[in-house]
Image 1 (cartoon, helix red, strand yellow):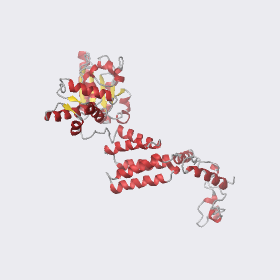
Image 2: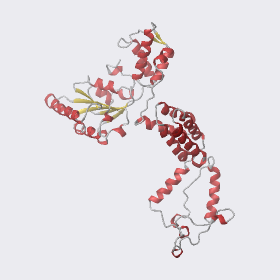
Image 3: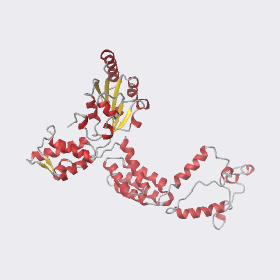
Image 4: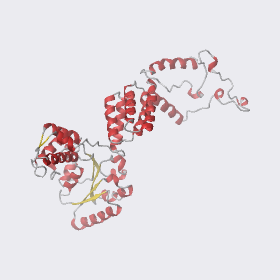
Length: 418
C-alpha cells in the first residue's frame, strides 16, 4: 500500500502544497537538500522512494545502519563522474541519519555545499540533538507530523478495498475502524500492520467482517511512541512537569502513564518530581518535598510495577499543591550576585573565633546570641556590608507562604532594626 504518486500520500499537506520545497523536489524541480524529521510511520521512506522516480536525477540510497565513511565517499566519487559525463545530479537518501557519527556526517559537507549531490536525510530524532551543526545549516529541515485520525481512516479504507491491499475480502465495522485508528496513534505503518493482523484472523475462521473483538485479538495494546534517548523522552517529561506546574493532575497522570508504559526509568521520573517539589511548589507546601523524596525512596526499595503507585501519589500531590517558584528565584538571584562579585567580607562578629589570636583580629567580638532574648530574634548585621538590606527570598501569597510572607517581614524588621 506504499503510495506510488504524490497524490496518494496521506497526510503532510503542509509540506505538499503547490510550490512547497518538498513538492518541487518530488516533481523533479527542487534544488535544496532536505532533512525529513518526524515520528515513525509518517511517510519519510515513502517520500524518499518517490524521489527515486522524480525527474532525471540518479537516486542512491544509503542506510546509516550499514554504511560508513568509505561508502559515503564512494557515492561522492560516482556522483562526480555522473555529473561530469552525463550532467545528471545524484539524489542521495540516507535513512536514520542520526546514527551516523560526527565523522560520517562531516564527510557529507563538501558534496552538499557544492551541490554535487542533493541530500535527502531522514531521522526520527530531533536534528538539533542528533545532526552536527555544519550539516544541519546546509539542509532545509522539514518536519513530518503524525497522521490525523481522518488520514488514518482513509488509509485503512483504501487498504481494505484496494487490490494491492485486502481487495475487499473483508469489511470493517465502524467500531473496529475507530479502534484501529486509536491504536495506530498517527502511525500509518502501525495502522496497516494491525489491519492485516486482524484480517488474517477473521479470514482464518471463515469470516468477512472485522469487528472490535477481532482487533483486540490481533493487537493487545497500542505501541507507545517513545524513545528514551530521543525527542519523545524530552517532550513527554517536559509536558509532565508543565502539567504539574499548571495544576492539572489529569494531564500529569496521562504523561506519567505514557512514560511508565513505554518503559521509562522510574528513577528518572522520581528525580524530576524531587526537583519539581522545590522548584515549583517550595514552601507553599513544605510537605511536597517530603512526598517526592519518599516516592524516590519507594522506587529504589520496591521497583516496578508497584512503584507506580508512589509515583502517582507524588504526582497528584504536587499537581494539586499550591505553587510557588520563590525557592528557585531566591537562590538564583543570590548566586547571580555572587558570580558578579557581590561577596564582601564576612562581618567580623560572625567570623570563627575559637582559636588563639582570633580576638586580636576582632573575630567573633560583639556577636549577640539570639537565644538570650525572649523572642529568639534580635537586631544584628548578618550579610556583608554591600548586601545589607538586600532581599532574595520573596514568598508568594499561595499556601503556606502566605503565612511566611508576614513572618518574614517581621523578622527583617527586627534583624535590621526597622
